[in-house]
Image 1 (tube, rainbow, N blue to C red):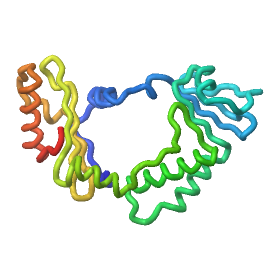
Image 2: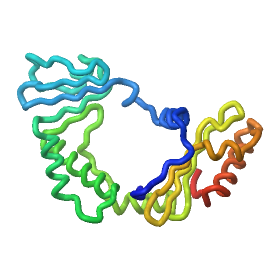
Image 3: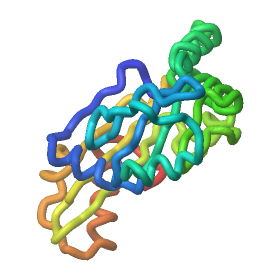
Image 4: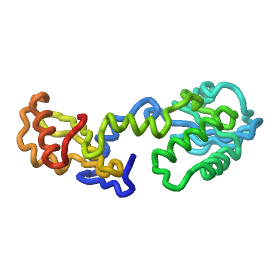
Length: 216
């Protein structure tokens, strides 16, 4: 659903960090562990904080939760040797001319699910064995959330200032622009510090500068 020439406007480093901080969760709060094995022995261990670990003498097997606890990891992904190459081969055989990023992402998830069911890929605390919607179903959901010609927006205020904001504008070929808070701050002027009033002021400003807001 992303246009090939999507534009990013009105961002500086602080604004990006503030926006991304909204999505920090358990998976990013603790280092992860990547395990490569041959079905009998652990061949490689890569820790998100400690870097490469020595797996000499470590047998493969047992719950991934115990492996995570032993290495102080918040999540674990384990791959059988050759699983990554197999995933790329399968994906290359399924991608069709005209597929957009959403089509390719769903096909990749299908490949990863197959490898999980075959035992070549395992993850903790979440497995990849469940189903997910088709690309067409996802598109219908996106159409409800944000039809073409409209935008979705989020804005956060702190101490009477616009702390950060993001406006995702959708055109006929997909989402074509992600606008940051820099162009919006001058137009807001002095804020009241009352979220109920400042929110409405920001919404009207976005509609003047970008277009109709479908959700925000």
